[in-house]
Amino acid sequence: MNIKLTANFERNLADIEQFLTEVDAPQVFDDLVDELLGTVLPNLERFPELGTPFFNRAVRSAEATNATAALRAKLADLVGTSLTSLREYVMNHYLVLYVPVENTLYLLSIKHHKQLSFDFEGHWGTSP
Image (spheres, rainbow, N blue to C red):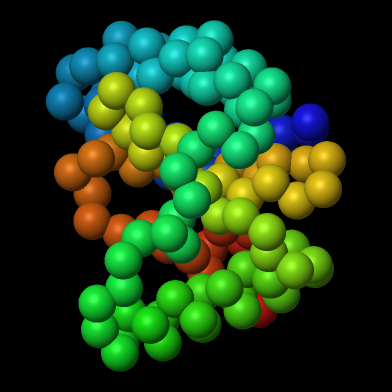
């Protein structure tokens, strides 16, 4: 399994690093990178379906149903194939959003648990 970082994932890491530097906690960013390289990426290389399926969440409104359908369509357009599985990997303090496509796993986003949303349009650095 090849792992690729999307432009959005790289932006998220840069934002996390900037925030932690500003609050005088650069070691926390180093710990995050160590966890990504030492645990998360090896786990996902070996077990790409390890994360929780994102679309298995209960949808409780017409708006959420429509947004989920639009998200599925956008992601399918971006990856150029039928979307098989958008997944989230839960770390100690972060969530990683990723999608396996054939022999490649795309890391889409990394957010702290306290952040509210993902930027789906920015994952690949282009808009569909």
